[in-house]
Length: 156
Image (cartoon, rainbow, N blue to C red; front, side):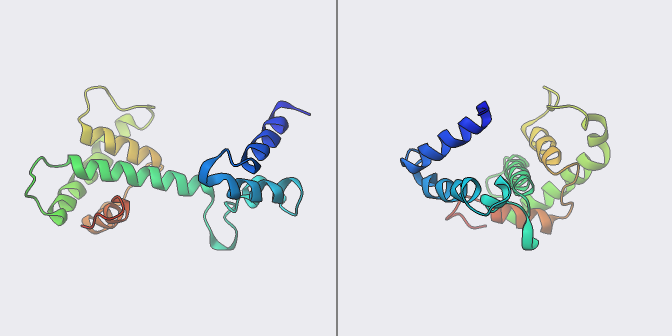
């Protein structure tokens, strides 16, 4: 058996032993479906294969990453503690438009933003990288993402 297969079986045994905290039953059931059941591949076994209109795990993860960076940019767009959430979203929309239309083409091939970038620009860089070069350009679209990306219990 190759190393990868051994690791898969080891993961299965760890999950069965309850060593993966809250993930144990999900991992056990998914790996049971793959190793001993009818799942053809791991994506299908773990329910992240994008069938029936669902999105693939990679897409979901990249969007979550993008949204986290948009939230970071939204928080960094102004130091004014009295600014309304909507005004903050409007300011961010202006920054996003400038970043996408002027800055992105100069830095899109970099793995990391230039060291001299502000926190706002760094967040926009990583959000755009995660968004495959695309970001919502309107205050409304950004505001919706920020409201959904806010930690539970915090409302805009």
